[in-house]
Image 1 (tube, rainbow, N blue to C red):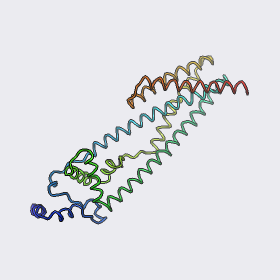
Image 2 (tube, rainbow, N blue to C red):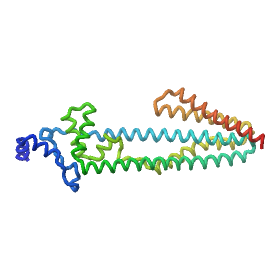
Image 3 (cartoon, helix red, strand yellow):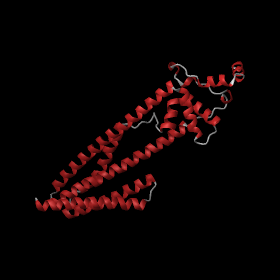
Image 4 (tube, rainbow, N blue to C red):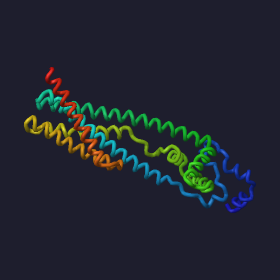
Length: 280
């Protein structure tokens, strides 16, 4: 090993450059044939894949939580609006129950189906991009190493340090390194469309159950309507607070905006129900 290192250190610059950028056969995995410069052989900088992984996981968790809160918010407003719309036209408790069940069923399955289609399309797109990147790593290894080096240079590294970091990152996991740094995609954490669909279904269902269950409280018709409005207002206050907490925005504005929009939706539905209840 020492003899090989010595002989390499006395080689010409052109020969050294060729040894660094030669393209191996596809069977060798493309970039695996790229050698580091002699000066960098013992000074390779560890890659930051673990940091990216933690950041991506944290970001995905926050996005999932935010989506769940918004799904529950949709369930609360949609089902409450439907129930109050029917209540404006008919004060039959059985009619309110049927309307609430229909609204929850249609809304939950619609949310789940839409989320499945959306996430599936996103996953297919990301997979296609990763397949293209994999082909480039196999067929254009030197160019990909230079590309990753330039990315590290834009982060403030010197060329020598950036090259060493890029070489080590690609030696560890070329596809993952490029996916994280260049594409901002974690190939090991692509969103599962079924998980997203189920989460949306449950979020909408949990939110919609609030006005539905309250509409069946044994009380006078007017009392039920008042209970629904109060419970929904409180639930919207909570979802507004949680969503603002997640994204780090002003909580008071988020709460006021969420409650006003939700109550306005229910009022509009009530008025429409009253109009049709009178005319039909």
